[in-house]
Image 1 (cartoon, rainbow, N blue to C red):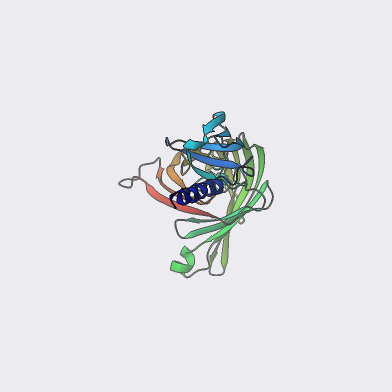
Image 2: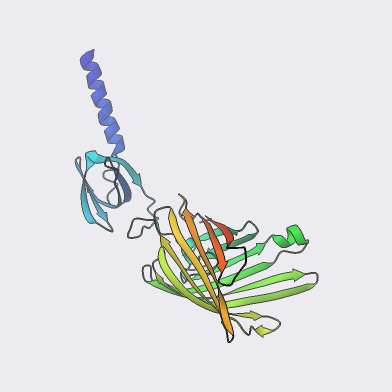
Length: 297
């Protein structure tokens, strides 16, 4: 009986090992995250796998060989999920914008997301092609507190990609329609943005000019913006949006800093930050900002 029990236990362990590594043949070429017993994590593509070793191709370390006995967890990544040089998921959805300003990057064809800013502002964006993104939305303050039809906006953006690590250039426009009894007040802005860097880590310089459908181009202030995002870890990015408004008599600025928290589902994120004008605001040091992005596809 003792020998029978030992034999059964040995067979069970063999079956368990077989189940854990049953993907040995099908794992070749897959993106994985390997966690070892010494606390390290390696992300890359499996080049080969034997009973004792795993050869992994990583972005930062090149090809490495790991002792299979030291690997205590294997996470197979979605084959459609792309990783940057540090092994962080490339966030196509949030790379198209900062807190409020657009970047040069566009959504890929068919990608889309819902965004909420400060509870009352809602928008939906979709990639019509790899170079053309269309956004639209509305605010809820008017119907909830002013008994008016909500203001609506639409924002098309055409992008020209230099390469996923080089940057992109975009031109676009945002048109806002506000309703007051029988009147419709429509204003907008035409923008251009130059982004340098990858989708996860970049800097953008942009400018624009406002217009009204009643009065034509806006005169006076000329807006510029400087924005950036940097992926600090798998779950955290730093984001900043900064405006500079100039005219012949001087100008003023509006600065911001925020943390973007990335969730497990790629493209979903929560932003929390502060805005502060460069002019004296008295006892008010900064204004809070919150927003959330939910990927639809």
